[in-house]
Image 1 (cartoon, rainbow, N blue to C red):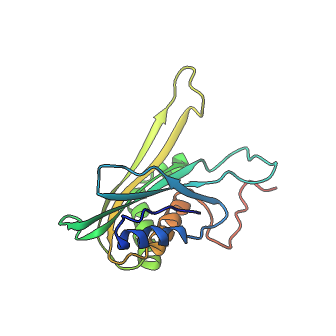
Image 2 (image 1 turned 120 degrees about the vertical axis):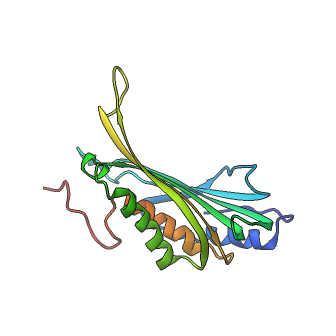
Length: 195
């Protein structure tokens, strides 16, 4: 992944953006720069992350669905009292879910634990973590394409990184997205759908 930085940007922001370009992800995940929000902080950078469709000619009859997310880096050199620092990460994940999982009352707590555990395992020091987890159900009527019912999980979170090396933070985000998408752990092959 390539990234561009401007010579007028603060060194800590440039180092943070550079660290994001060193992110290595599993083969099922695609990462690339996207347009960041312009008015949330003096400096911003954003990554779009999505789960790639299965490779090969075999299209599964039943799919685990789609999952994607955005990870946004905000930097305010003068700091922000609510952030408790100068580097804020804002994360958004949306993933299709099976009806049986979407209806589980513990899903929000489990999804939040995916993020907190991934951050504790992968990321450098952080503070001021907060967010929401929402499980939704949609019913389609009339001539709208797609399944008659769809269930989704949305996770929104933000936290302050205390060091400019954000590689572990981005890795934790990707790990959370993979869990929300229902991907098996790295090194494990799913046997679902195989004869």
